[in-house]
Length: 250
Image (cartoon, rainbow, N blue to C red; front, side):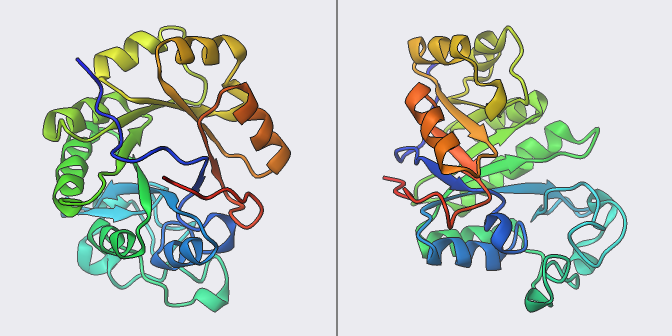
């Protein structure tokens, strides 16, 4: 099976969690700031509410980044709609809402931002989350360049593939297992995502031989980024979109 590729050239830089370190993570404010700074590609996280709706948030709980409490998967949409997702970053962002995937997709299309959407399932909801998020992404980006879906959960990725086979997917690991090429082949994954420290020369050689793009997180130093590109890494995720300057997404 041939892995679907993104309908756009992978950029060198993705703004991590929308705005990186400069805005509240996984918010529309972050998307707008990334676009103002010249970023053309962004990464954000999506999980499901108690209603089965996809929302942008990294953690499976609400406390760190919002004014809410408890698990996202146990919280109704009506409650999530009232949360402040900006004050935890800085009071200047007080009142910034927690966005739905629908909200984020609409703004990304308006700003012409390419997207790597990371699926973040709650334990036991891997397949459901993968299927729901992929189906929503296919619907929300119809007629536009499709997002690249990634996840640490292979079950979520397999369900995403089953739900929307035309969407490109990327397998995400901290340190890729020894059999990562076989795993990517089973998933029909187009890209390999890993921690920058774990992209060793052997991995990059195998990836080049198999024409698999390697994307590394989280890189905030221009010299480190340049060295990774020189060694064969395709893209990096960065919190410092103000410091890493080549934002062309193609």
